[in-house]
Image (cartoon, rainbow, N blue to C red; front, side, top):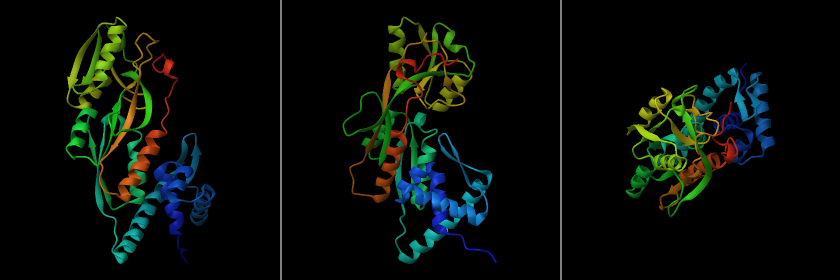
Length: 298
């Protein structure tokens, strides 16, 4: 005869998967780490399988864990929808979140998963663009919350973290060896003038070889080894990798990832999203000491 699964254990498992670790899941669920671990163990015993394996960055799902996660999410959504419908208090709504495209990878998927685990019926509308345009949109009332990348925060900002800028190019590319150094930047990117000023100070000739309104066009050009670009440390990708230039290119300095919140009435869902953003981005660390942030890695 089939046994009933414990929804509390399923929720603990889904939250660990969404947040990337037992510690964050415990904070989200307002439980102790040991209580979350016990619930995961109870679920593994009930299913007679291993769902999670610890890794250097937290935990990873096993193949069986990935299969169970899909079922767990559907079961929890149905459970929550039923209770909300019976109470007539379904937390439905929308939050408009602006994020510069270059700090979306790696962090934002985890943020959205964690928020959806707690507010499955809330919609987060993600608006991507350069910082200057997001500032304009926010001033017009087009965003409820937005993140910015800027050296000097504006009034009302909360700086979540400050990280160095690093040079990036194509893997095994040679564009960084050419002179004048070919650069690729979006027209409104604030990093462009910082890069040009640093190159001028280092007496390195350069040319703005590629400009575009689309970040995808810039990424494609750089990954094709047609030019160099720069990103915040930790947000390089498989296509845009840190340049092992041996210190021949100048350090650019650091920029802050800041957060701006519209001054409106209290919203529990929005406040929780802000907490998740603060935790996810505030925990970022530079991959190398600032003096070595753009030194050769090979």
